[in-house]
Image 1 (cartoon, rainbow, N blue to C red):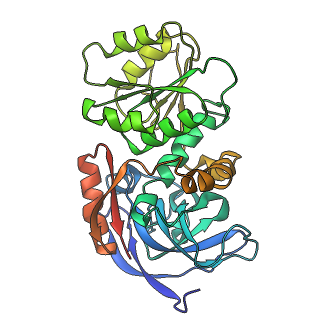
Image 2: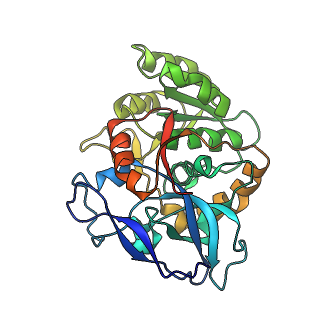
Image 3: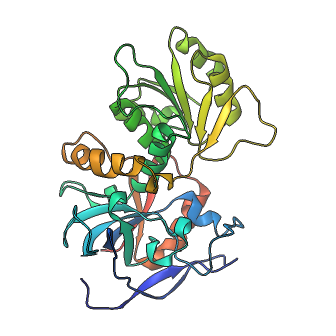
Length: 338
């Protein structure tokens, strides 16, 4: 455990257009919590949305945001059994869900629940590991959550059903492709043509160019004779996605990272994925305890999309948020601390 009681953090103030670097206390982990000394932090759209007018009524400001961390365990709670001080780990931080600044990523030390963290092998750099948590958690909740697609973590025997991943080159999309393919499902994905090879390497059986004028017709034609078990909409045109789901045989459910527009079609069910839902259900332990540690150690799961390191230190976080807001494809913005 660090001997210091304070650290530096990047605070988000209400209606402030930029983060402010200022001291914050270093929390002592309780129960099954771990304290991570952060070596790399990844950026997600939520981080800049909170600077752009998005409001969570339960969230007290100022706070410390950020969801994706990788680093070294600095301290453990008295009930922790999976980790020891000095372990290399990644973790999904949930400050904006639980309204606790100590559980935000944008600081030197972050509290993370034991069942929302995974060890990482020495072969995986911290910057690579940091791209995973929120994208992985959101994809897992969408695929396996009881209120979403509710797929079995292992596909039933026989011909595998098809999972459609819309926006496959996004962070959520890359993880959804890998999780669905690893579980035994056939995966169709949409992406730009330049990212097709990356998605095939992650396990997508077929990748369709989202810019194609015949996208809907091509997907429906390829789905003929197959059963669609669900669609995960990470980003992109949800109207076209729904057209596919409505026209295919099988499930009429979409798990989406954003709510459906008001008055959306009634022949398709759209569930809004909460990326931290797995902290409160069986999906969290399923992914972070039972699946990811061995999958990373054995090279069966890849840190994707690749990190785009844009700076070092907490001072680099604001420019990283601005870059993410401008748009990123086939990569994830990362800031290193160590």
